[in-house]
Length: 333
Image (cartoon, rainbow, N blue to C red):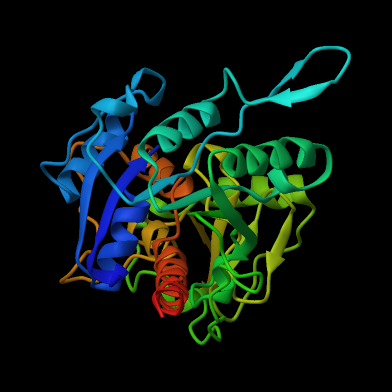
């Protein structure tokens, strides 16, 4: 089976379309058979870039039998608290959570592949039982799974963004199969992802800069190249890598630029910078993602902060499809 020319995607919790953009970036033939999205701003952004794709709305209200056939299901599902059922067993239950609707759809539609994303904490510490229940549910409906925590900075984009990726295959995978693409040496650093002439509105005033310095006990912001200031951890990243992109309302990321004429320069990321660091090509004469003209900085920045790194996802897809083809070819022989 030539997977790279037979991809039929259903994208749940679609956002701006991280899976759709990743497949597009690969340059393969694919169809987006439908999406599930409830945020009107996210939907407007998706529709501008992928017109004429049907939105089936709230995943809780979808009848799987109403969906078209697809062989790839994706979703960055919210990890809501899982219920404890029964005092005797204390077993975690996925019923009543959004993940249960993923299981319901995939149990009925039986796509060949599932790719899910969540925060890395889902697979660690107190959340481990929840994570194991998710894997058990996927196994129950016929999926062999592999998972890994992957970081954007290991695949050519200077952003420290760790996310948990779960791959499900309808059938049985070889024991040595994994979903970890070969890492890519980080050649370009943060400065290479920044605008040449940032908008002046992005810069903080002298009073605002002094306020940050006072609160964080910083003597000055004196650098010889643009660097990322991690407001949350109160530290300047000298590795030329950006901290995790988050929605603007979190207010935890600043770019520190070299002093000019004795003036310290501290600013927010531009929208183009947000999306470059999420794996998009954003040039003066070409933008891989188009923005609705009526959406604000906060709304579009939120989409980036909550989205998928499309560069990393394209590498995951490429790796999976290549190795699944090898697996299927061996089985045919």
